[in-house]
Length: 225
Image (cartoon, rainbow, N blue to C red; front, top):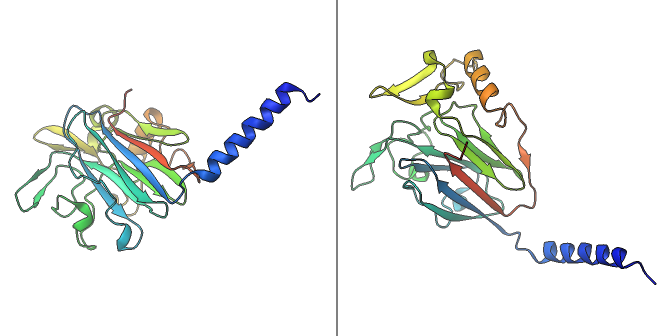
């Protein structure tokens, strides 16, 4: 008689494979959560053609404590980040203290020549990988969870050396670290040292997380420390 434990093992494998075969791998979902004590204005930029630029369910405003989900085609690749201190009029024109995208409420409507205003903390999704990327500086605690979790929960004022802080109304809103600020020298030593010590779980200090068949992500602004 076949060993019952072996039969159980084979059954588990069969059920797992059946689940993978029947899963919908044509699209992926990202849940955006705002655990900050203030409003965050999510920004998004696509690496793909125009048809993927505006995912279903995307909203450019996320109040404290709120969350919502957006749905992408599996082929979608791009960046998601958070903007702070924003103000927009009825025509959706305005500005943000950090992460601004040409003065537009919806970053996907900004002209291609309107660059994202760095420094920003950004989530990178590309080729089945995900990462919290600080190569363009740091403006918000951020995490991404899929088959694993990556992120940094440190506040900007706590992690950023004084000499590279950006302040608005005497409040630290972001931390310089991007290549554009340092004329080709990405992540200057004082920035790299501060972030690597406090947040070693972000790119470029840690490799991107590879989740080729993952269809569900959770992106959290101000994750718990």
